[in-house]
Amino acid sequence: MAPSATQQVLLSPAELSYLHTSLSLTPPIRPDGRTLCQFRPLIAETDILPGTNGSARICFADGTEAIVGIKAEVEKSRPSYQAPGDQNIGEDDDDEADEEVRRSEKEAEQQKGLNEWVEMSVEIPGFRDDDSMSVFLAAMLSEALLADGEFTRRLWINRRFHWKLYVDILLLSQPLSYPLPLLSLTTHLALLSTRLPKLKSEQDEDPLFDDDWEASVFLYPRATDTTSARPPITLLVMAVKDNIIFDPSKEELAVAEVVLAVSVGEKSHGVVGAGMDIDSGRTRNLSLLAVRTIDPPSRLTPPGVPNALNTATGGTAATTEQTSTQRETLDEEGVWQPPRGGAKRKLIAAMIQKVLEQGGVAEEVLDGLEAVELG
Image (cartoon, rainbow, N blue to C red; front, top):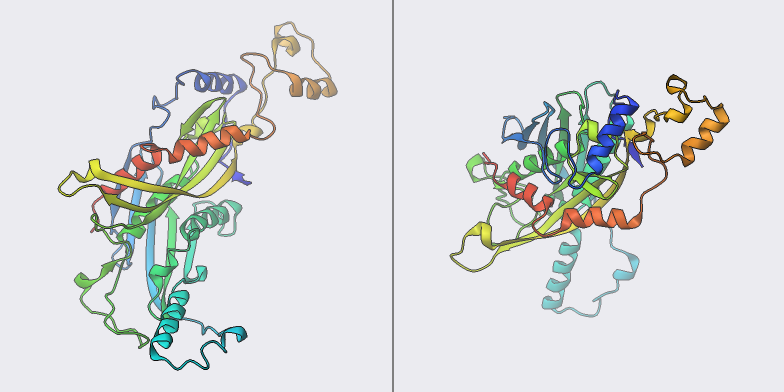
């Protein structure tokens, strides 16, 4: 389970009960007036750091801001050794065509790449580099990026060399809310804006690149008439009873019963029909890459005291043992009780389905990020 979703929220049991009741309504009433699937407004821009191959900045309406810079370096690949069982293949076959086929298959196998070709770090103000929050955020973002194994193929140059990517993520503001969605969206834009020098050498020669930066190529091609993939995004989803809420704020996380970090990726998209409007003909092929449960801070909030146990309202104070027993069984309307136990599988499946559904939140977020102009 991931670290607590955010810092402890200083709300009284009465305030927590009011907020939980509001989010349990149909439709729920969110503190900032947003709908269930509505994201906070944001400002996004790319190519803000001149010394990087790709960079981006996103600022949410609540003031949280993040910057991501990506730097690429050429690194020599470790030599791969052929398995003993493969050395006898084709010893008696000197046909040049078969030899070419075997060479192509071996080259395709080596183009898979390694996860160690990507190094990601997250810095949060007020947190050490080895803090559990920073370590988990970096692991979650790396897991989503490397889950399908296709990303490292883009870093392959030849059998002797590859690109090594350094992804530096910096949260400029204090973590007012759980920063995972903000860092994920910023990393998504930075990867889309990443450009690599155009390769001029051939086959296994030492890499020689074009000096003209205008001739550089995007790590993720921007063509809309061909199938292409896009970097993954990670969304934060919470549930209060049967209501599924996206992009929760700090106050909403304080009463959350279940919190999930869902990573989705786009395998490919195409345009249906020639001459048609791109937005109306595009279909996205979303896939689930990773799901992590987040320990909600609501479990650490103080419970409310019913009138029957409150001496200020004429009740009888219970002993310590009676209080612990009653907290486990108490279910009084209007009295806040921190959530206990796990989540139902049916609810988790519904939360994931809500993210992946056609025309859902994930597609809206990807459409919005694709509208950001790249430098």
